[in-house]
Amino acid sequence: MKVIVGFFTTKPGKRAEYLEAARDHLEKSRLDPDCFYIELVPMPDDPDRILLAEAFTGEEAHRRHEDTDHMRALWAVGPKLLSHVVIDNVISGQVQHIDERFG
Image 1: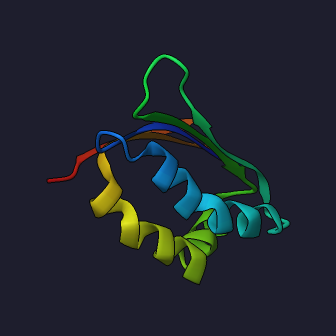
Image 2 (image 1 turned 90 degrees about the vertical axis):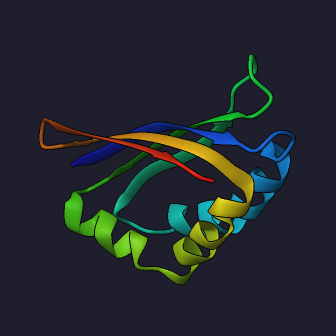
Image 3 (image 1 turned 30 degrees about the vertical axis):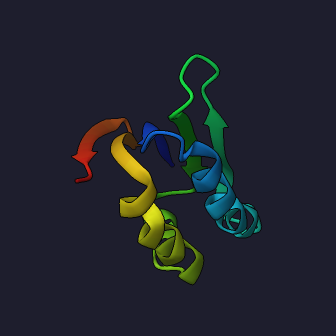
């Protein structure tokens, strides 16, 4: 199993726009039988922060998920709407930490 947890920080005032851009991606991802869950949760204490939580049957399933048109469409808006992404991937008990800032 692969579990992904992280935080997205949007550019100031862009959280609602990012969540709207993610709507199609979330809906299509939830139809994938290898996706146990996927959620983007607005953080109530920060108007520009979003919690990401998702889980897949495994690394291969997640790689297939990343190779979809809806994932590429969401990645395309990232640099315009996001300022910082921090993600932890847990794959079979091992943790991979990603910390990426956008210009």
